[in-house]
Length: 236
Ligand SMILES: [Fe+2]
Image (tube, rainbow, N blue to C red):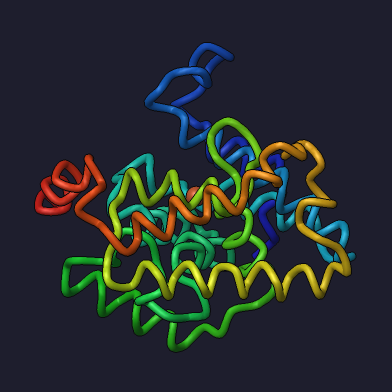
């Protein structure tokens, strides 16, 4: 089947959700803004690596498409949604973006709770070694919020405050930084050289944010919203 273009991916992403700019500004649609930033960032990294940047952008746009169905189970829902549309090659990023290094335990929020979901994803990850596009989308997911580009540390602090800290959080964080390092070696530049929009102040702030983040990871009881998150998980 023909590769999904970025233009087609954009249409698929916003279909039935975004009609005008106001829809894009709505709180409930902030995940779409995040997808748009991930797409833009993926395109730029792919251009730097001299690989298919339109494909990378398309993958960035659809990586969280499962959120139109269910937030907490969005990787699997997104995978099923894309497969049902006939986009099997693109469906993989819906699953892979949430797990670093083909490892189901290297994820935010503690990982899938339902047995069937866990088994399906674990089996899929074992059978599909990551390629550079999987890695690019994972990376972009880690520095693109719904408001634009930020540092990996700022983004992870935000995710940890919302989703909570778990026994795997420290290792997940370390592996993310290793992924960043590997990509930077491939690009022959720092991520932040490629994204000057992030700004010097945020980059200088990394050590402080890192300290705050490690404090949360090591003291999960400090996370105020963790109880809410756990309640939501029970509904999944
Ligand atoms: Fe995402």
